[in-house]
Image (tube, rainbow, N blue to C red; front, side, top):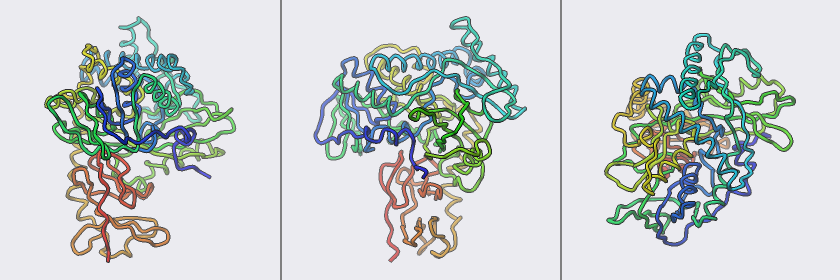
Length: 512
């Protein structure tokens, strides 16, 4: 039987519960979001004696993006450094490189200091291609990494390779030693324990509904309680406060898929990711006395239906697994979402010029393990008044973040399509147009209605308008969810909100 849940979550299911906020608090810093970023920020702040309170709307720690990641701790973010050098210059690229390299060491130091048992191990990381047209890109990236590291240590660690331990032929690749991987939920539980040891507080099942500015700080409304604080940190994956930060105009969300398989003979020891599309990623994970192989990829922009193309979603991964590992036993399947910035750089720092003492950490571009640690250090330094030498390159208030014009054009087209084109792509105005165990949008009395018809024929009707900023939702038949193609919010077939930035559930509609 395949478990439709993350291996990280299922293997730590008894440890994820925390407690619900039931009273008002007055603290120094209120952190919204108890994922990897929120906990990393909370750890560094509480360790310095700052009174921290963390709230999360999920009922478990690490039950969202951080618990559904591949959890690769690497500075090798696909083909990034040649791009950074060309777009921003060598000094900028060096700071990005050095900050991510430092983050790996920082994570290892936290594990040692707090004695966290989280299956941490150093392994080589590889970026590879099977496309001969990508070879030049690989060569340039090797040169870029070696040039940057040479500035720091006079070493050249990146190796150009043409062979690997993968069960297929690659045309070229980059090997980088001393990267790492771990069990993300075990690490997060270790952070929780440490934060509480340093007198920090963490509450789950605690939905933030509003953040109000006061003369001496902020009032965060959570459930029926309030948290008064001088500082607020938005570490909730996607900022739910739209103005004046306008992050919804500077990011989009991508859905990625993972399958954990058990092999009779697993010869893969490193972490791998393809440079060419469709993305295919590999890493191992401890599984008792054995190791699972986690195969990930099939990425697509959230709001696109992944069952419509064999290059996306579980279909793509299952086809690859059947071809490469025909005797594999599939144990787990899961997916997650990641915030992608238009210039490939995370937003870490002040939320806006107009909201002092409010900070944000978002847009990690699928590399949240190192980015979360970087965010922890930058935001902690900002709050205590220290200068962080990496803060300027992650500046979340940067005026011109749009370097990737192709991404901007694609994002604009997809948003316009959601507001306009999808509204006229309506199936037959009859419930019979919706097959069992499927969903879609029909017109009833001139109104758009989102319909899901269960296997038993039961009808679930919702208003298919996203409660974030009003985009028309699309039906995802793989996960049986309503997905927003504009900003990535997701709702289950009953209308319940399951992913930000939307906070409210969908309106239930009656067909009587």
